[in-house]
Length: 411
Ligand SMILES: Cc1cc2nc3c(=O)[nH]c(=O)nc-3n(C[C@H](O)[C@H](O)[C@H](O)COP(=O)(O)OP(=O)(O)OC[C@H]3O[C@@H](n4cnc5c(N)ncnc54)[C@H](O)[C@@H]3O)c2cc1C
Image 1 (cartoon, rainbow, N blue to C red):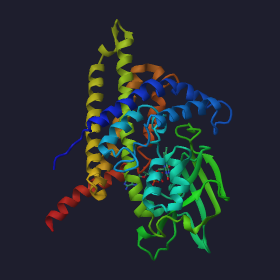
Image 2 (cartoon, helix red, strand yellow):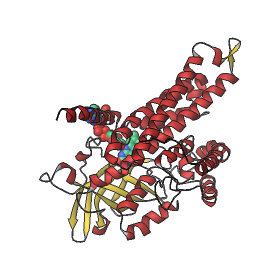
Image 3 (cartoon, rainbow, N blue to C red):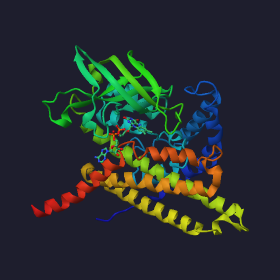
Image 4 (cartoon, rainbow, N blue to C red):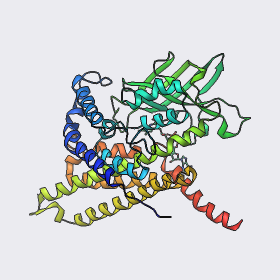
């Protein structure tokens, strides 16, 4: 079958508009936006911060540059996953990029859940304001007490009591849950006993953020940063009562939903990581031309040509793998796509980390400072080697798919 990794001509024009907004409108405001976080309460938006973010969002929305992530859907532009890869890469060049176009994690994954598995009432209450960019959401799966890379360990209890469910337990690393605009959580819980098959013991339930009994214990820190105002929250649920109608699909169907949710979300992170790598390489090149030592531009010293070349080659390899994984997803067989998504989930952060680290080196001490975004880019990309499944779990998936070919061949 012919593998098309390109895009339609009309889509290219759209992409060029997104690239221009990122370069000319978002990036010039990033430093001011992030400087505002330190002013007053870190978990609210200062008026200037809100003005910047909402202003950029309003302009993007008014121009129709919105919800590109709705691939293969009548609601959006009907992009293929391959086409969306180029958009996510462009948006990923800057931390605010995805949100300005309403393409940010974890909301896109949560919107997908509401669209595919939600009731009409859930769609009206949560999906519509999320699609409009009016509220935000979080996804609560990981727990402090259990190894959550094996999601069959998830232990938060969820017990039926009349026309409600009652939830007890802890969740942590709930990205985006610190944001004052975050109104709803999709929560992975345990509903079934040991008598059930392992993948039928869990469910997903929709929990409004203002439900009594939810305690925000603390924001988790990423290498000392709390990532305010979005944050990664640690929660305790103390007899949190949720109407039974908030259960998605029905008890025991959590894994079915998780598979649908995590595939696209994972590859979107990879696409954005490639955007980060491109941004870092561009910074590195400009710096190496502009600054001189020992009578020459830095680019011409030592092994710097080789370093720049290696970075370029690694980015190209990662992008091609990402596009191939996207293409396999577009063929509609989630099972076949899983090992491809796992491959790029390992490779993209690895490449981006290497490129960002080389850029840091080219910048000297300024590279790790607050004056350039490289340090925060590195810490963010480093988290992708854990979030949505650690590298080891994805390598296992890749190896199992590889071995399966040979086991089947023998049968
Ligand atoms: C910045 C950030 C944001 C996050 N956002 C969210 C979020 O929004 N919602 C959410 O629910 N979670 C979120 N997470 C949590 C993340 O998904 C989990 O940390 C991840 O799934 C791993 O679970 P764990 O931390 O319990 O690690 P564990 O399961 O304890 O695993 C620890 C280590 O054990 C090793 N290991 C595990 N399995 C294998 C294996 N099969 N083979 C070999 N070695 C193995 C690996 O080295 C692994 O890193 C986030 C994490 C970070 C850092």
